[in-house]
Length: 133
Image 1 (cartoon, rainbow, N blue to C red):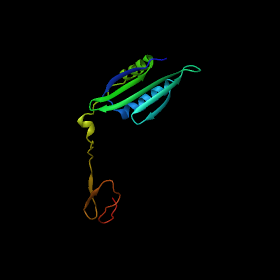
Image 2 (image 1 turned 60 degrees about the vertical axis):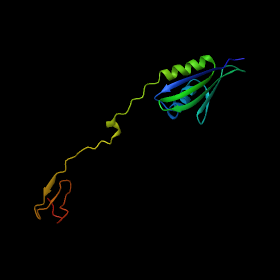
Image 3 (image 1 turned 60 degrees about the horizontal axis):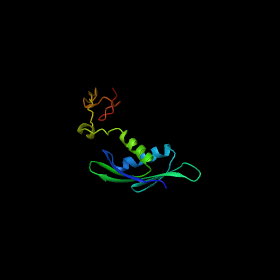
Image 4 (image 1 turned 90 degrees about the horizontal axis):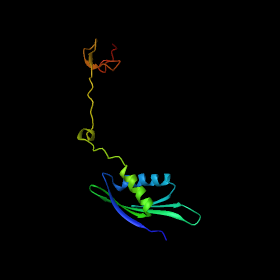
């Protein structure tokens, strides 16, 4: 009989929509067959002919992070905890990054030699009289 450990932890700055794909990818790299259902990730890994290792993660979002409840062997639970600890902190977006950056550009006007109207330098012909430069 394999002992099942239940271990809750809080992953700050991340929500479950960011964590679930990360955990899914990591477990698949570790050799687990993974299934995702809403806020739950289940993983199964064959360890022998008649034996397997299982992990279940339940995610709940909170304002300052995501709560993760791990159910599985002590070894895999510790591996998942270590994975969460090595996640890089998310960079807080500054006000400048959130705002749309508008670049100013200079528009040069030239005077038509025929009708003396001003028009953009990028135009080949005067829009008023169709005169060329």
